[in-house]
Length: 336
Image (cartoon, rainbow, N blue to C red; front, side, top):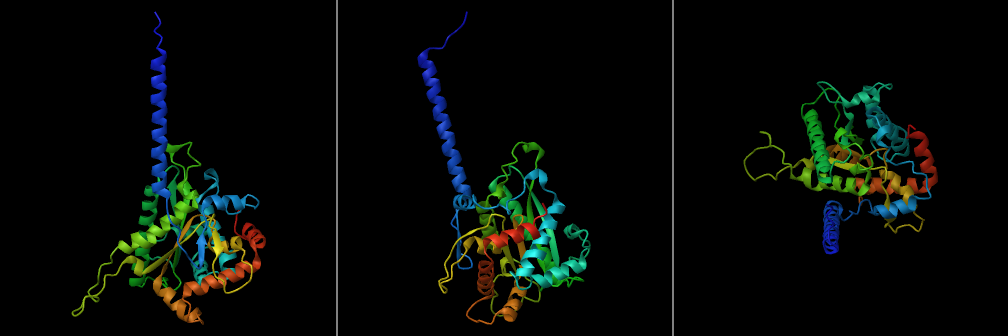
C-alpha cells in the first residue's frame, strides 16, 4: 500500500522549508556584515574605494595585479616576484626613500640565483627578510586575521631582538621584513579554491588596520632594568611604538585625490600603484629608522616623512600615468 501525503501537509512542509532558507540567508548576511563591515581610513590625503567600484572601473583594463590562481602559486615564485617588485618598480621610481639601500643590503647577503633562501636563516637575522605566510583556502576572516597578526607580532619581536643583541649583519636602519601572504590549498577544503579570504582587498586592509591600531598597540613590552628607575612613572611602551607596519595588495586602489593644492588632473589609478604588490603583503620597519629618515629626507618641516613620501609618489606616478605603469609592472614585476 502506498501512502500519499495530503496537500495540506505538503504545503505546510514547503512553507516550513522556505522559512528555514530565508532565516539561514539572513544569518549569513548578518555574519558577513559583521566580518566585513568597516570604514576606510584616510591615508596619504587619499580615501579608499569600495571593491564593487574597483571591479567596475577595471573591466576595461588589463588586470596585471590580480592574485594568481592557487594551483599556479609556489612559495619561491611568490618571493621572487616580490623581490622583482622591489628591485624593478619600487626602487627605480623611488617610492620609498631608503628601499634602495635596503635592497642593496638584501642582495649582498643573498644569492641572485636563490632569493627565496631569505625565508630561513640560522643564528643571525639578516636586515632584509622575505617571509611567506600561507593561509588555507576557506579559512574564515577572523581566524585568518589572527594568524596574520600573530605572525606579524613574532617577526616584529624577532627584529627587535636582533637590534638589541646587535646581531652581526643586522642594520635596523635598513631592516625591512616582507610578509607575503599566499593562498594554500587545504586538503580538507578541496573545491573551495575561489574562497580565499585575502583575495578581497577590503578584508586584507581591515586586517592590517586591526594589527596596526589594535593588536600591536595592545602588546606591552617588558621594561628592562635600565628603563626601570626611580622618580616619575614611565609610560608603558607597546610594540606599535617600536615598529611600523604597512599593507600592500594587488587590488589596492584609491578613490580620489583630496589634495587641492594643484589644478593638475590626478590619475587615481596611477597613484594607486604606490600600494600595489604582486601578493597581499605586510612590511615591518623600525620606527627609529623612519625617525632618522625624517631628518635626512624632509626639507619641508611642515610635512612629516609619510606626507613627504606620499606627495612625491603622487607626483611621479601621476606623471607616468596608468597605461605606462601597467606596462612597466607587467614587464618588470610579473613572472608570467
